[in-house]
Image 1 (cartoon, rainbow, N blue to C red):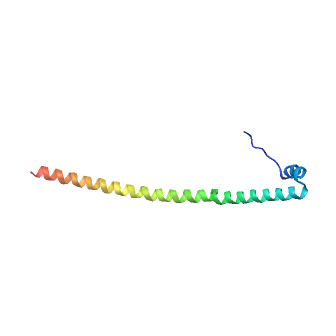
Image 2: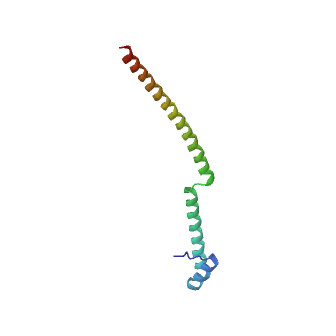
Image 3: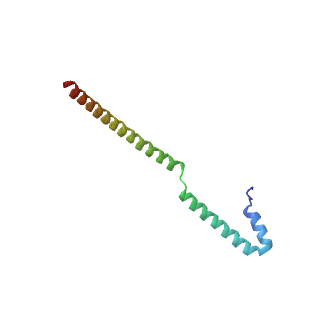
Length: 95
C-alpha cells in the first residue's frame, strides 16, 4: 500500500472547505506541532552515525582486550599442560 502524501497547503485547503479558515489554520498548526514533537522524540531515541562509530570503536577496543586475555590464558593453559606432561613422563621414566 503506497503512502499518501499531502502538503500543508493542500490539507489547509481541504479543511478550510469543511471547517472554515480559522479552524483549518488551527488544526493544521496542531498537526504541524504534533509532527515536530514526534520527530523530536524519534531523533532522541535513534542513534546517529557518530553514535554508532563511537560504539563501534569501544567495541573494537573491548574485543582486542578480550582477545589478548584469551591468548594469555591459552598460553598459561598450554604451559601448564606441558609442565604436567613432563612431570608425568619424568615420574614414569624414573621408575
